[in-house]
Length: 94
Ligand SMILES: [Zn+2]
Image (cartoon, rainbow, N blue to C red; front, side):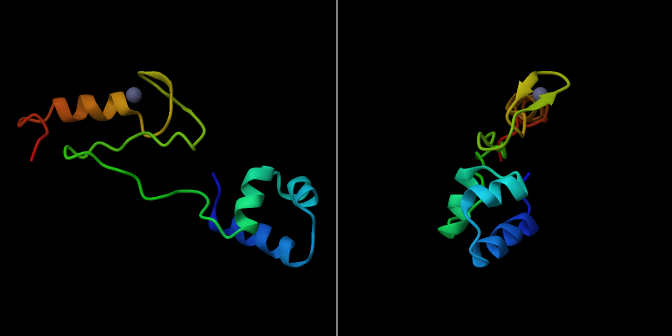
């Protein structure tokens, strides 16, 4: 995951006049991510949308993770959340 200190490191290298390719070689970050950081666009985690029942939509910008019950999914696992909501006594709705 892209952490704040990774962003700071990429910025520092940009400030030093390093090329995007050189920064990719140093940090292992993608050209896309480095481009975003150089344009001061938001990178990494963004506020996510939650449904009324409190389910968070999986973040498809994150690398897929292996859910022990549902296989390879984008985090957080939507199926697990839906099951948790369905198991609440009131059906999960406020
Ligand atoms: Zn799951």
